[in-house]
Length: 558
Image (cartoon, rainbow, N blue to C red; front, side, top):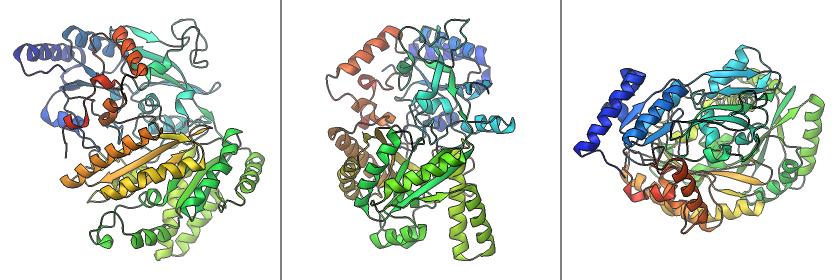
């Protein structure tokens, strides 16, 4: 990798920075130590050190930035908002890259109410588009994730992330990308390269090879504009919850829900979380009650489960449609779950309002406090299902933070800035109950060996597979605990790969481990990279195993 310690390289960098300053202005070309430290911090303790930070305002700015970088052979690492929590945050894969922060490119170019789509730039946040629709009383909903209101829509979509609504398989709702290539040319995908095209944002495939997928989870270009479909507002929405008391009983529940997901009865993403995943969503680690023990003692875990009113597993999803359609779906769901030990509880906004009234009547009692918490969670779920983001579900990131949840949480939640320690591992498994239990059996002893609480969520993000999010939450202020977390992650990664449960996305610490040896897939993507970016200007190492460093070469940012 190129370093910038010798005179010639430093001169090239300084000259490039001067040209970027002329383009963007001095306030948007940053290389002071304080700013670089912000972009180097990471929840994963695997932060990397950038050379500088550029903040363009337009596609034209990005084109010129790329041309300057190409001339001086300086690597660029584009980010949308820098909130890729648990997978690298705002960090490049390696030290010595210039961060291109696209956060200022935050324009909502178009919202078409008739055909239900939006065209946005990478800096547009979940909250921004949600409020745009609400303020203008546009009867459309976007799909959103639990990553927080100020996270980028484009950034998550390009990682092929998933949300909650019927549009939760997010990349399937994308049409029309605008991309700046490493040679400075602007590529329009689908029909977008025909100026007269009327269906650029309606039909994603265009004519000829379908290129859009090449620019997700890749380093082949910088996306500066994207079309995404919006969901017509549903006339009726219910949320359902199922509490499964015994661990092994999750198997028949998954198998009962799978046909309903496959035949379209259940249109939304259905989430399945274990007890600790739900407990961690409302509080941080109870240090005093645990008496210094890590992980949670079994008796305390049981007490917290009872207090939270959850079982070994909780299944959660939403029903959409007309009142009659929702009523019919409720009956189908009840019938499908008979004999599984799971009974669905249905939440409506009227029921939540009634619960809130009861909580007020109970005053300051402990029962009232627990009820208010449940009402808040219920309202947050309803918001998420209607495309209104809520940072509440980031609480799990703060589980091992010594100071607990910030006083203003969830507003402006920033786990990296708040020195949270957590790593996410996201294998995909078949939508079968036996695979849920098998994966759990693989990872549970690893968590026990390294002494961490096991948080896990399974999501029915399409009709046949479950997307898993396994969380390792740790105290970043403890060096030994940080090292145990990294060792735990490596053991988990190796185990799920060997079991055939390959992650659907990975953090910067795992890019090098994606190639298991002489893999023709990665040699093919390498050939495409060399054809489009022979100087490797854009994000070297990103989903590029041969250029990514192994774990040992990362800096510890503890």
